[in-house]
Length: 176
Image 1 (tube, helix red, strand yellow):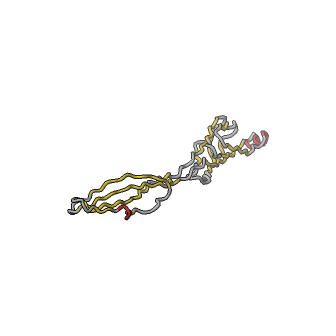
Image 2 (cartoon, one colour):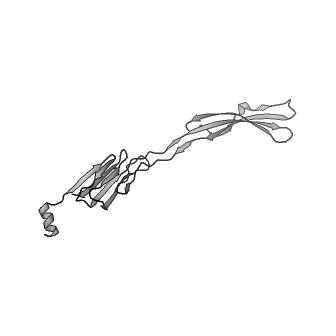
Image 3 (tube, helix red, strand yellow):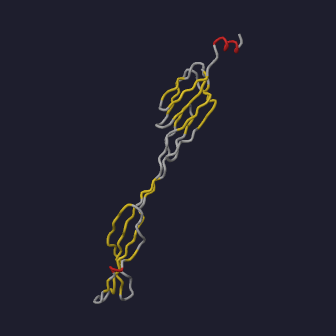
């Protein structure tokens, strides 16, 4: 009896579809030697973010009468979140003259704003895997790309692990 006659006598094989949205095992049917197609995707990633913050440093400068180096001290700092409120500046209300000092003739208080913001890059979602193939997750909170493979050889009657992270999916077609 020819192969075609045996197929006709045993009944035609049918194309089947299976979808996995969680980890599982595909038990390859005894009559299946290949997965016709496998398509799917992994998990969504997360978007990056920027946490804006700043620090204000207080700098006091004492100016020397003799032209020598000025004396600079840091008067402390404070921190806050959000956009930097303004650029560096010197407060004219805090400028003082020292008429009686033999060394210094004036002082000035200035404020320096320092950007301490933190950038978090986008993260990539976990991939799905099956039959030695990878189905990637997305980078950032967007729909993951769909990966497709055709003609994947499998061993009949063998279990094949399918790994699908939350939010992922793999759909396979095969003849049985």
